[in-house]
View 1 (cartoon, rainbow, N blue to C red):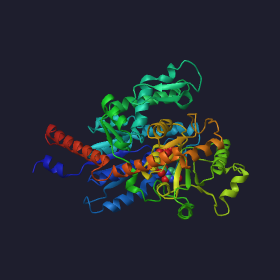
View 2 (view 1 turned 60 degrees about the vertical axis):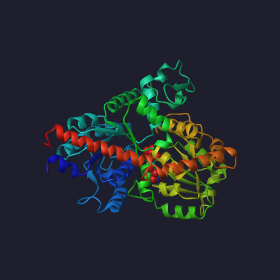
View 3 (view 1 turned 45 degrees about the horizontal axis):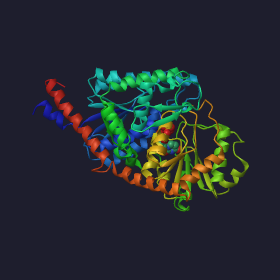
View 4 (view 1 turned 30 degrees about the vertical axis):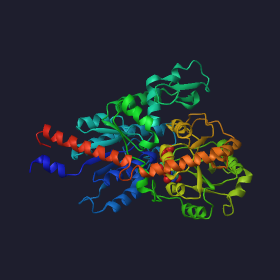
Amino acid sequence: MGMADKDEQQPLHVLFLPFLIPGHLIPVADMAALFAARGVRCTILTTPVNAAVIRAAVDRANAALRGGTGGGPAIDVAVVPFPDVGLPPGVESGTALRSEDDRGKFVLAIQRMREPFDRFLAEHRVDAVVADGFFTWSVDAAAEHGVPRLVFLGTSVFARSCNESMVRNNPVEACPDDDPDAVVSLPGLPHRVELRRSQMVDPKKRPDHWVYYKTMYDADQRSYGELFNSFHELEPEYVEHYRTALGRRTWLIGPAAVASKDVAARGTSELSPDADACLRWLDAKPDGSVVYVSFGTLSSFSPAEIRELARGLDLSGKNFVWVISGADTTTDAPDWMPESFAGLISPRGERGLTIRGWAPQMLILNHPAVGGFVTHCGWNSTLEAVSAGVPMVTWPRYADQFYNEKLIADVLKVGVGVGARDFASNTEIHRAIGGEVIAEAIGRVMGDGAEGVAIREKARELGVKARGAPEKGGSSYDDVGRLIDELMARRSSDDVRDGNSR
Ligand code: UDP
């Protein structure tokens, strides 16, 4: 038996390098589970604190697959020390950064992750790497080891297409004046996509962001292709655009979360102590009566914004579950809560609950009592809502979130916006949105009006498609298969070219 024959019997080995924030780690663990279920050996390279984020999902996937692939776990987490850049011990995640100085050090650590990545590639045979777009150096590192690099950014094809148009055309710069409300069009997309100037990165105000976007864009162009946690039926025109007009090799393999949909502690090693009580509380509420409010792992709000949100939940008249994340210290202040609000959440949560810490979001979104989701439009949250058939009230803050809002509200029509206008990080000012406006948006999505009925029906239909995509015969199942076949074929041709020497 020649080396090539032997090689062909070895499972494919894919190395994943997720960015060091939960919103990128979680989908990578879920995607690895999808590949592992198809016989691929997966290694996720990350640091100790970040490994803890995905441990429950990985253990569960390995337990489900045990025996399937012979020796060793199907998914391995290669834990490497966090680079020594002067951050305090345990600060290894984008969620733990508290100052600009911390942020600078974190960026340096992201550069220094190249060293353990290089070492892994030197010591192991790997057929492909799936590296986060933020690790721009990974395209060169992978090339040096002769391994194809697939980029993954944890967002929609729609958002990537919008970003591509923005980076290529820079329409903000061409905008004639400094009017933050000026309408900016993104050229060359399948739909007419327009944002306010204030909803976009301003290359003049954030030259650092702009330079980084350009560097990422360049690295992505030179990559083998791109992996998406999305599915074809969700954004078919954009898949076509990305593949054909932009000529990018693209695989959509999601929603990956279905692989770990009933893991309560998904994305954490410390589930909120409020989690059990919350799920029991939901059990007692009528179907579709509860609005779930959560803004992911990185967003925080000013006291003024928080007060208006609390008023909005009150005015909406709906039951609610509101997750107050670890990133949000605003509510540590004693006076954040409007007086009337205290009565809603105590003594036993007649109208609502607040959850401190990590919520079991997948279980909540899939609970029949939940009928709407106030979200910052992080892509994972968006896709989880889509998969659960839950309509959204959109409240984007920054990153890809304003694009995702466009997809949700204007293209898919499964949500209504609160009218967020400011693309701004946590340390910058967001104008507060009035409680009345928030309540109105909730009412439009969850109320009895014709608009709400249509939105809910659309969300329900999309949920069915979402859950089918990764199933056998679904579009995402097929894309996983296509990629595996391609990588296998590539390995055989490499072996021939290398004279079977590897
Ligand atoms: N998440 C969760 N519980 C929480 C907060 C977040 O399970 O209390 C999960 C959520 O389900 C999603 C991810 O964390 O999978 C957040 O990713 P997303 O892209 O929505 O937002 P980001 O945090 O990256 O802004």
